[in-house]
Length: 376
Image 1 (tube, one colour):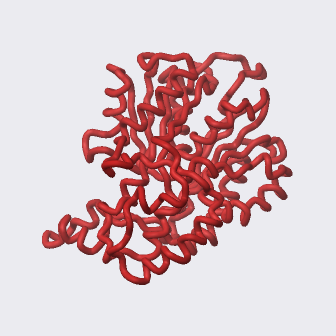
Image 2 (tube, helix red, strand yellow):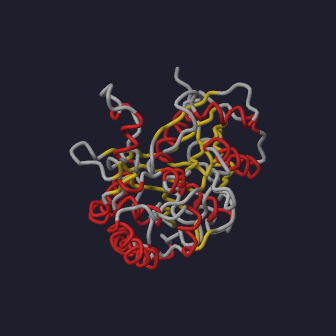
Image 3 (cartoon, one colour):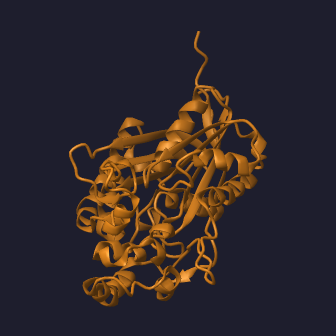
């Protein structure tokens, strides 16, 4: 006879922002000037770049960069470690109590071994199950699904889910082949930031119908990009190394390693796909739309937020305060933004007992949507 499914609760949350906050006026100073970029790119920086920052709604962001030397102050694993320790402290747990470690990120420290194992070592966990999920903004939802299902089925008791993001490694002057840059690649320097978020999950036994604080009600992952072109790209992998005469030097010379974004596609489709993904998640979990008390989204700019908030207000019957733009003081940390802002809201006491909180993101790289729902 199959054992009953466990119920899964959030025992602690944590977030980490590296170094001091950087105002908009210092971004080029910290990342390094683009003084060798094509004239059209430099003209864009001087004119449109400033207007982008003004409309972004972001006033400060964090970079894992030493302002004196330009060196990175963190690796992916060390930023994840700092984030995890905050969550473990909040949960009242020692790292040795973790038996499932799930790390999602768009970054990794080495091609091998997996960064999740490097994080395991840094946390001092001798033995545990570990998994690493390579994904951008949808990575949190994917990691939560893996951990939630594993705990529910009784495979493990305590899980640590973390998403670290170091965007600045792709944005620094030293990484870029400036003569090969375009305006979109330059614009990303004014959008992305560094940070991490984490949660500690625990499986509990409780009868159906009994209220359990901070319970995960379900998770959701979906890709709708099967027939859509990617809207965020960055080379540097196997597909750029197929030709024996076109290896790493040739890849760098062509600027194929640059991070690029289709801003027109994001402005046109991201809000709609996010909304449709949330609606499908609620339907899949059999949750009524007007039961939601808070939404936590990873939205990079205030303009994109303002352009898409109305559909959530109309369908879910919420106010703007229930789905706030969160990146003003932190910058946009990609997938990490979800757990980062979730932690900040939890620590500020914005979630009240019994509140239903929807945490969801859309990833433009190949159009995925993922998230989870928790009853606080």
